[in-house]
Image 1 (cartoon, one colour):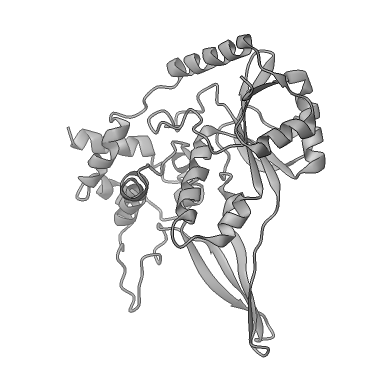
Image 2 (cartoon, helix red, strand yellow; image 1 turned 120 degrees about the vertical axis):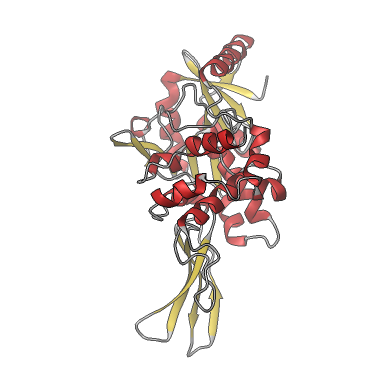
Length: 344
């Protein structure tokens, strides 16, 4: 029971105030029109406690859209690596995004280890937030089994009627408890109320596609020649929105930028997308995935097949961002159901 603490709702504003005095705190903030973004906050009034997935996932703090890896000076013949990071606390991370961060941790800890990513993640504290309600029609977290927390956080908040019950998962999480000095021990009644929330989620969160979680990889492995990709070929605009907002996409490009003095410059890492036309081009102008349907198929295989072979887990977390942001209205659940229909 010591793993669980209680924060009364009336003390939540003071919790954010005290926490933000010692740390940079980012949390989901409303941008209007049912859109949200992780932004720095110093008051609980700024935080959207009930929100659908943010426009960009918290991935942007672990793997920035653009970061400097090195700087060089040709005349001095120097090339110096750069390590960019900042210490911060991310509050209000939903379970789908916790799963996304876990995927990134696995990839960038694989050989060869990405030192920049690891140094950054080791300075970020994560406070998760339970989704008591279903997000919207785009979410597919239930079928991806990411609607319940599975680690990857320091503290995890679950809203009860009069309080938050908080799971303390790390020593750093205990440090936040001690720093703010507002938490009490959870009682058996609190734990029972928490069990009621979890039980209610089983009724609220339903399977959203016509195929079981364990059958997704076999289905995609048989889909190479599917007509579904021909349909996506006609619709996809190759804008890259789906990969930009995905919590597990990690493709990047390395660019050398020289200053106007033509002597000094920087080596930059920035996000890239497998949906871009030039992504799969090699010397001579040959492209391995010239058609849009081929690139869409590759994106889906990178979520439901390839990572299962290498890391034994799917790299789709069911957040629904790709469907929500697609200008061509390509819906992940509709694509999966169409493939399932073909395989019946």
